[in-house]
Length: 533
Image (cartoon, rainbow, N blue to C red):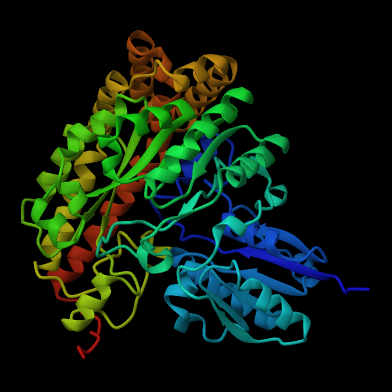
C-alpha cells in the first residue's frame, strides 16, 4: 500500500501596502483578498492521488498549529512582493521540523535568496515536479530541481484544484490560457521567465477549467492572468469563438478580465470577439507617452499609434481599461509628470497604476545597469511595515536625473490623477464612451437583481464608512442611469476601486515625501553598487 503524504499549500502574504491588493474594496464586497493562489492549486493538481493537499492562504487566514502538524511537507513561494513572508514561512517550517518546498517566479529569478530552503523548484513545474515527487518518495529531504527554460508543455497542465478554494474569500478567481509575450520590453521579466513565444493551452483545456468553476457553483469575475492574452493572436482568435459559445450555452456566468498589449486596439475583429466573450476590463501597460522613452526601453509597439485614441477604441468595444505607467526611465524629461498625467486625463483612464521604475532580477534593464555600474547591490524591497511596495520603493539603481526630482515628478502624477474630482471626471468620460450594447450590457440586464443588490450594498458601505466619497458616488449613479444605464456595473467597480486607491494614494504621497525629505536633509544613503564587470 502506498503511503499517503499530506501537503500543506501555504501561500505567502503580499506586502500590506500596495496598489494591487485593494483591501478596502474587498471589504465593500465582503471578500478578504482580490484573488486566490492559482499557481499553488495548479501544482496541487499535478501531484499523485495519494498526496493529499490542504490550502492555507496567509492573505485570507492564519496558519494554525494543527495545519502545520498535519503536514508531511509544505509547498510555498510566489512573487517578489511576497518574498519577506515566503522567507518567514521557511523559518516557521524549519523550526517545526517540516520540509519546505519553494517555487514560483521569485525563486526562479532570485534562487540565491532561498539557498537555505530544503527544496527549490526553479522554473515551470510541468515536467519537473515528477522528479521532485520521486526524490521525496525515495526519502530525500533536500535538493534543487531546475526546469529547462521555456520548454514546459502547457497542454499537459491539469485543471487547477479549484475545490480547495473558498470562493467567498476572493473578489475574483483566475485561470491562465497562455505563457510568454512576443515583445522585448527592457524592464519586463515575463520574457525572462516564460519566453517570447507564447505557449497556449488547448481550447478544450481552458473550457474544462471554466466548466470546473461552473460545476463548483462559482459565478462572477474570472481573470485570465496571462501577461499578454493576445501575444499569440492566431491561437486566441481560434479560442474566442468557442469561449463565446460556452458563455452563451451556460447563461453567461462569468464576467472576464485580462492583460493585453496596446495593439489590441488595432484589431477590430479581435476586440469584437473579446466583447462577445464577456471581457469587461483589460490591463494595458502604457508606461510613458514619450516616444524617446518607449524606444529606449524597447516598447516600440506603443509608438506606432495614438495612445489615447487606442484606449478610446477599447472603450468603444465596451471594455474598461486599467493603465500601467512608470516614472524613472533614463530618457524621460523634466516634463514627465505633466506628460503622464495629461495622457491619463486625455485617454480617460480612471485606474492608472503608476509606479517607480524597478530593476527586476534577470531583466535586460538589470543587466544593462549592472554593466554600467549603476545597479544597487541588493534587490531590496520595501519593509511591509512602512506602507510601500516595490513600485513606490523602486529606483534600485543610480538615476541619471536627480533622485529627488524623479520622486517629486512621481508624486505630482499620483496627486493629480487620484484627486477625487479628477478621478471621477475621468470615470464620467469613460461612462460616456463605453458601448454597452453588446453582451456585457446584456449581462447587466440578466443580473439586474444581483447588480441592484450590489449597488445597494456599495451605496450603504460608502455612505456609512466613506462619506467623503458619497457625493461623487451618487452623482455618478445619476449620470450613468441617465446616459448609459448598461454601464452601471463597470462604473460601480471603478468607484469601489477608488475606495482603496484614494486613501492609498495619500499613503504613497506620505511615503514619497519622507524619501524626498531624507535626500534634502542629506540623510539618505546611496546603497552600495554592483561593480561593473
